Image (cartoon, rainbow, N blue to C red; front, side, top):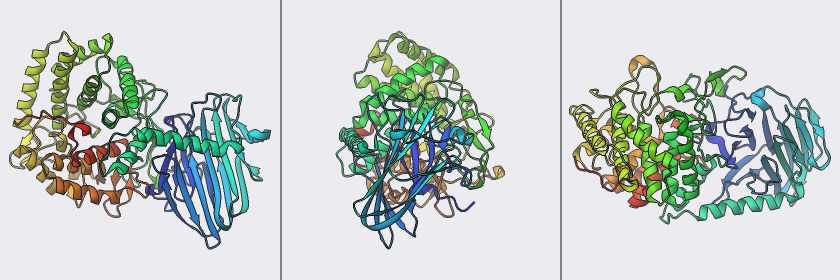
Length: 603
């Protein structure tokens, strides 16, 4: 199982509909078509031996360097051998031209110096490995295969060998020469196919699209490049046709190598997506933020007035979970899961994150329709009735529900935001009841959610275990960030959960047998909390240290393994990147841009 590349070896390219993971060695090992949550076509990420892939690399020994072109999602990989240097450009073209097929992957290899022999392999395994395509030559369209009424085409300007559902070529190129590989997927046979002669135009158009998008970022601080990279990553995780935002483009990358903590993140978690939309609003990317807000208000009508934890890309409430036995799993980590039964969990904190973003939507001057106003009134009454119930909490711990302190605090946040929305929108609502309930929540949390002996907010009411989610209580306005209880909570998290710059979510009970990786979003929450508490120098130092935990192209994972600091979990993770953004903005003193509460109370 050791022949799997580290998760850190991958970069993401995409078209805001789906995304491809490209290894440091120039292999596309993961791509779902036509959407993030569709069956995979390239899937060697989860089975090194049987999975599909698309590889471009030298035939001799090489080393690589790579980067994104500045302010874009266009990836360049340089191969260095003793005979020369080659540059591989990878992208998924972004175009508003409706003539072209649904999805495209464009790979262009150019020899920069010397002479090199290159090997190209295209081995699709569509429908999660269930199909082996039968490619036929179709003129300028290249090699095409019908995969159950859908079309997969590969065009390449080199002699190709076709065998057993695999295209391969071996070419010798000298300085100035190039070879182009263009992969096309369509639900129906398209009227017009991309032509290899247009590859440079497609690259230029895609670069122009991304640079124009990045230029809209209103942040101008010293960390602008880091802010833009995380923003582009979040944009890549957005689904333009619907407005939803996925948690990650992958499934079943393990939180524990060889273990069973393998989940499918290719759906829209309301919490993570609300965080992302909040950041988009503050950075000036209102189109994406508004699109998500509209998607959210539509999707949640299916569960009115309750909010579900996650939905499909098009807002379906049912996301059944099943185990896929065809593959061995990343480094033998099984089961492989398709779908996610967390959709059926109760996670009360979701209301706080959603309503925090909806308030910002209204504050930015966007209208709210009658149905949404009706939902706001109903959800306030729902929270009055349900806040005292146990739930599964932000970490989606499977098993019995518990009284998680973070969930109670976020119910307080939800009601506080609802009161402000009611005032702005003139809602006929039980605002006094909401206010009394907020007071009751505050009383319970300060009495039972803060441990005097631990000098910390804790994970569950009446408990003593520390949970890193408490780091967010000040930035949401539940308590002043410089209140002694918040300061002591920061200190408690640093003592109990921090190992160097990295922070655990919580420490599992010894009886569980589980071993947590260190959760990167929590490190960024710590930096944000430190800055909000006035400890800016410490926050800056922490962020400086955290740069080492991005990979070479600036992408962050979900977790970091304890013993060897390897990446763990689905990748790249929206929650990590949005926490990174918030921390950067807070550290640079732009409280308004960070989108944080400015009226936190001293309790």
